Image (cartoon, rainbow, N blue to C red):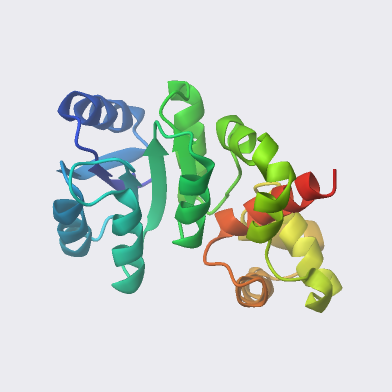
Length: 218
């Protein structure tokens, strides 16, 4: 199996080097570039065309949210995973809106991080425990959460609703197709419809919207 190419964007050299050694040693990823700031990271993403970018949120100058926004505007075709120490729920929601495909806290255990990033590389998106905790904080149970909810899901077809539920469970398109006994191409159409109807930009935001709805109902 060909390793997934990975670009690291983080301003802490020791942490960045540790990540590079960790992912290279896994045999599943190969780090093709490292950037110590957002601007260099955006440039390298365009030049190196990595399959995945790991992005720190807080860096001197431009931050990780700017990286997400510019990669989206430049239509850089890669999976974008935020790896951060931030436990600010507002930053999580902003990253979701800017199209992050994954959001992981730096306190995550290495084996859990590897599994999560592997899932993201394979098109499977789920919320790790730390992120679920952020969505479940007291503020999420009241008006703040309601303001963040996507439009009403009444317009979804039965198959789209089933697809959304399976995305929230972390399933890839291939697994969803197998579960619903339909083609993977049909699943891609459903996912595209869900992104449009719910006005979101990534599978992670679709998954998070299901969890936010569940919290708002309690």
